[in-house]
Length: 81
Image (cartoon, rainbow, N blue to C red; front, side, top):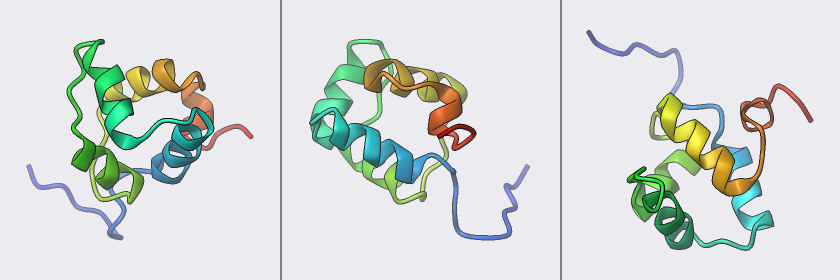
């Protein structure tokens, strides 16, 4: 099955992910290392692509990102302020 999107964005969490990462004083590499301890393997380049909305994020990646960055899934998805 081919993914069909009406724009180039592959996720909606990218800008908020970057905000939360910077608020936690983490580099993309440090975030990648923290995720690895949870058996979630997203390398630095992939984190960059997520922040630029050029990579899809799976549900288990979303939950791991929320846990590491101490934000709720609703906030990361832009459903709450």
